[in-house]
Amino acid sequence: MKKVLIPLVLVFALGTGYVANAANSGSKTMNSSYVMQSELKFISVDVADLPEAVTKAVSNDYKDAKISQASVATTEDGSKVYKIVLQLNGQSMTATYNEDGSKYEPES
Image 1 (tube, rainbow, N blue to C red):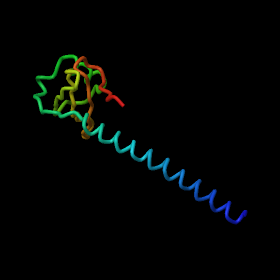
Image 2: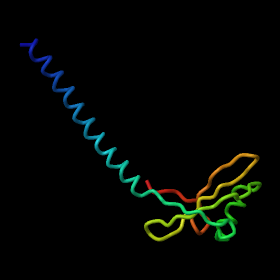
Image 3: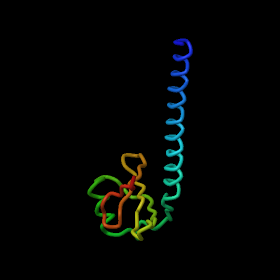
Image 4: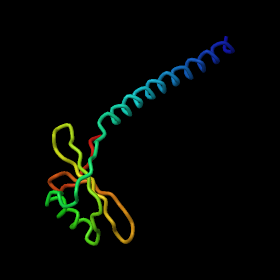
């Protein structure tokens, strides 16, 4: 009886783990597709057209950096997000700001 019971318990335990893993895997897929749908679409803008709050925030956060490119996207709630490409010490970096000059942090 023990010879039958032990393999049966192992099969049940492994099967339960597989089902739980498959359920988690499915939810990850749904989250990934949700993130893809909510990505922002940035459109290039002239650096001179950046809001003063954004340029002021960039100069405070990156004192020696020069803004080389800028782009803007509109969020689902209608607010604007600015992606700024900076040149600092010969290297390029990107920063993202809300139109009020605060750092943009995407919702999780």
